[in-house]
Length: 260
Image (cartoon, rainbow, N blue to C red; front, side, top):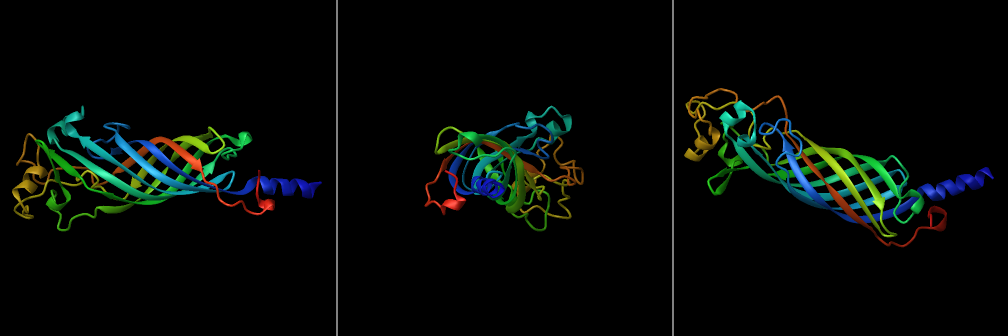
């Protein structure tokens, strides 16, 4: 009897499920141009992913997300930000590998286990390219070295994605979900703002564009060595949205490992 129960549990818990899916939602950022407000200036975002589920409690997925993030001092209520008067927008493309932990046992096509909340954690590589709006144009900021950097910062970086979500079945082949995921980055230049206003006598700007985009404040020219950003904190970006995933039909494994 005990052997039969253990065998039944093994059949139920150990299976192989493969899914492909899409994510539609938004992206935003937290950093020097938006220090605190979540979902502020949210921009459209989307993604595709593949998920492999070897157990009712765990899943692993890899995917690609893309979207835009932006910040604008003119939208702030903070006097220092209004004085600084900087803005940026950046497209973000990330490639991620993520592990999920289901709080409840879950499987598409099984009505007994049709809903769960979950946590996720992983790693990703992302590319960004901050630009500033000048009139009707958006100019790339990284090549201009607006803080007098001796070497331009890298536009491809690593971040740590994590977050929460929920997913449920809507048919024998289809599941839907919702999730929210911060990305912990290791750069402070997602918005091209980090340190102090440079001294052009010590670190000459490469062009007049560099100088004008470095200091766009109402007190331009009088801010040398004053704080431009906060170098003690790194920037964050966030993806959130609704997911739609479809179970793939692969050849079934041996019956002892398969749960109909």
